[in-house]
Length: 195
Image 1: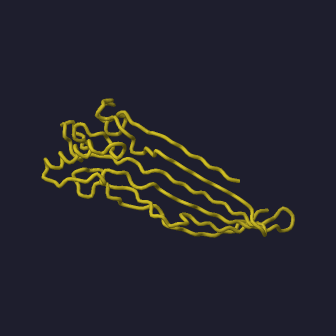
Image 2 (image 1 turned 90 degrees about the vertical axis):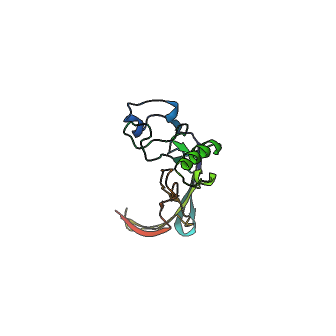
Image 3 (image 1 turned 30 degrees about the horizontal axis):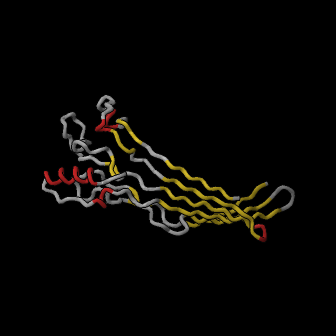
């Protein structure tokens, strides 16, 4: 069997965030933008087939596009007691579409603090997350309804480094620098007895 699925999506937010909830759910253009969980492309391919000697092989591969980058100054710029403000005109996330305007706003703000400018690369989402998992199974029939199933599984077979995390504070030098990675290749085996 073979199954392929692809999803093209767009996730926007219009001010309903933890930050704006504290501001009585304001819905302003200042709070409108891409959701930090927006993954534009999501491709999944799974297959399962039988080999000689009663072996069954199955696998799944996934590719999910990078998410936009959340941005904040980590300061209360408007005096409302919330330390998650952004310079005027900067949406809650960056990384989608033309980067010139958000980069200009961020660098103007950084210049006002005597901080060096960022390049457009600092605003780009991380590379797509890629993963391939495989499993091979052998069933051995015993007396009656009893059987033993032996299997081996490998996760992230290609050992791709899928980065995540990062600081959203545009005042800091480590803005949008990854802080972690998903699991590296893992292999396990098991045995299941059914009766």
